[in-house]
Image 1: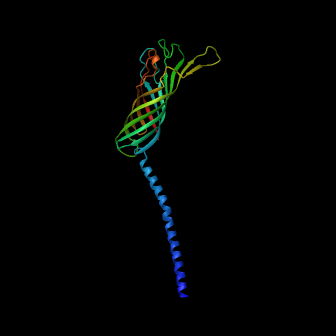
Image 2: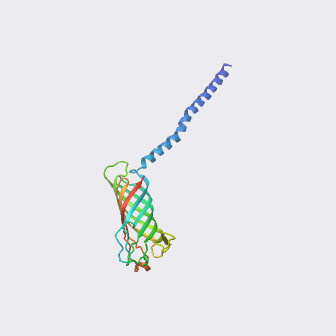
Length: 247
């Protein structure tokens, strides 16, 4: 009888011991995935930032066209001829001072044509206002050299780049004063201009500090397709202006 009771209490003690061990081990097992998740998130946060391994942000720029066409058959209105762009930038830091990156951007390019007796682009007709407009989708790769004080900020830098783009749409806008009192202005828009190239490419540079940068782009491709290159003067290739990072 005594032996039976001893065995009973021994088995009961073993069962309770096993249950207590499982209860004690449960929180530890539950914490392992949580700790792994927290470590992964901390690592991602340490690798992401303006001066860390990865960084991504939006930007916008305004760059007026510099100069005039190569011939007398066209003249541009300064400041009214420009490029406006918005885009997304991805940066990969290689060292403390060196990084590479890529931009994807939409560009609204406008050549505002002056009205004078020598005008031949796209024809000799004079208007109250006239412009050629291009809608571009660009991709740009760049190399960045960072200098100055170190820290998790964009800092001061110099970029050199190469870019290429597809001209997704083209249009010719003309505005005139009407011959009657029925309207204040008459506007005519022509789209799908056959004389403008659909692909464009060039080089660029940026000198920046934190969110602001002085940016320059030089177009290496021609504006007009070959059948029209002898009729129209080449438009200015350089744009120079400001860019702001939207962090």
